[in-house]
Amino acid sequence: MASPLKVLFVASECAPFAKAGGLGDVVGALPKALAALGHDVRVLIPRYDTIRASTVRHAAPMAIPMGGGELWCAVEETRLPDSDVPVYMLDHRELFARGYIYDPPNGFSPDNLLRFAALSRGAFWLGRHLGWVPDVFHAHDWPTAAIAMYANTIERDTPFGRAATVLTIHNMAHQGIFPASQLGMTHLPSWLMRSDGLETHGALGLLKGGLFHSTMITTVSPTYAREIRTRQGGFGLEHVVNFRGNDLVGVLNGIDDGIWNPRTDPALPAHFDADDLSGKLECKRALQRELHLDVRDDVPLVAVVSRLNDQKGTDIIAECVGPLLSLGIQLVVLGSGDSQSEATFAAWSHQSGGRMRAWLGFREDLAHRIEAAADLFLMPSRFEPCGLNQLYSQRYGTLPIVRATGGLEDTVAQYDGMGGGTGFKFDHLSHRSLVETVRWAVRVWREQPEHIRAMQQRAMRKPMGWDLSAKQYDQVYRWSLERRRGGV
Ligand code: ADP
Ligand code: GLC
Image (cartoon, rainbow, N blue to C red; front, side, top):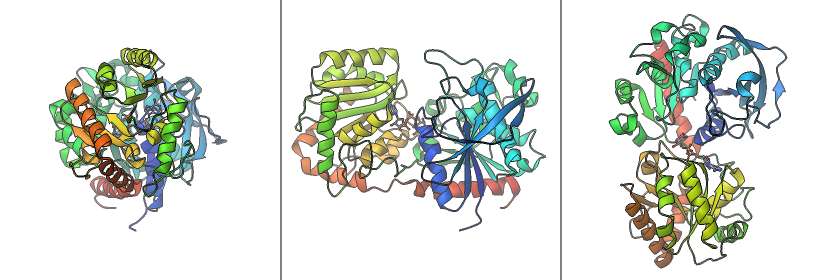
């Protein structure tokens, strides 16, 4: 390969250590695929107290200039499972030992700017601490978007100023907006508070600043890369995205085969693959027993695993439980979030006999068993930058029913009436189109089992590994270095 690169991922989540959603999955998997290409890839995340992994604590502490003075931190070190990729954790108890990643349940954390600016600035001080100067800082979403601004200002004339910065947008709806008066604590220069910088309607917007200042920008699917250039998808930042349009690339997320593989998954009661799906039926029966549903092979099991919020369209599912159950299906929902949807799902769970079950909360092992057991997977997102669950469900032979948006459009192929395709898609999010699309899928499931089988096998065999995307990130890193340094 071309010369190996030194890449530091800096993020607020990294599975299996800290995960609130797909961002954690990506940061826990992509570095391994890049390391397999020969790169020296390392990861920096906060040392949340919720992390259970065993780590080695560096003897020397590390000081980050921040706030009124210096933040003294410890550095802890471990590896991504099944790899040599180092994961460094920034240990500052006051900032990160709070039992949550972003905000407490039903509350909000008033000092998130300080917490995540410290992580971003900490990336440079980790480099000094290790005597290791990355070629590329790879930031993810608003929490680490400030890296690009540090690189272009107070770090510009240090060895770290030669590094390129790549910002991956996993979700445009969250922009890291804080009162402008808090800028001082970040040590970023005040001139950044302008319309082609941090300033967002008079407040400080980390994502906006990151979009202007990163050497290159990626997002997690080609369709989402187009959508964020529009008024509907840009959440007010579409003009910035368009301004940076030549430096924006959409790269699809992949699947970590070591974690999401129906042949080996330790969370499953039985295993299966595309050649022999019999274990899948055992998984279905076992889940029906586990969740006290009627144990019936002849009833299609439709599943939802999701954060319950506007983005995911789960409010529409909650409003349609009655009509959906009247299609003669079983419905399983694993998720948490919006309290009204939670209450609706809980009520149906109580009153539906053995036809519907809701498990409200976050439970990794159950998510795996549901992906394996279900026949159909429902994901009617209003917008979806990439989405991982529809990938996992395809890998587990569970055909997705999705709204054709963002990464869902890119990763699910429409059923063609003859056994082609890998799922069922609809365009318009409404109660009617949701129920009608499920009706369509259920009819095919009942009347055309050979089509379903062909689609399952196609979905399960589809290459979705991170190796494909890692090659594209490799290219993005090289382009960024050319832009930053005029050549690698
Ligand atoms: P997003 O990051 O927008 O939530 P993705 O589909 O990219 O959506 O990723 C969601 C990830 O979080 C998947 O790994 C999924 O299995 C997991 N997940 C979501 N909700 C739950 C839950 N309630 N319990 C366990 N895992 C969940
Ligand atoms: C975000 C998006 C989701 C994406 C994930 C990982 O949470 O909502 O679509 O799959 O990030 O990139």
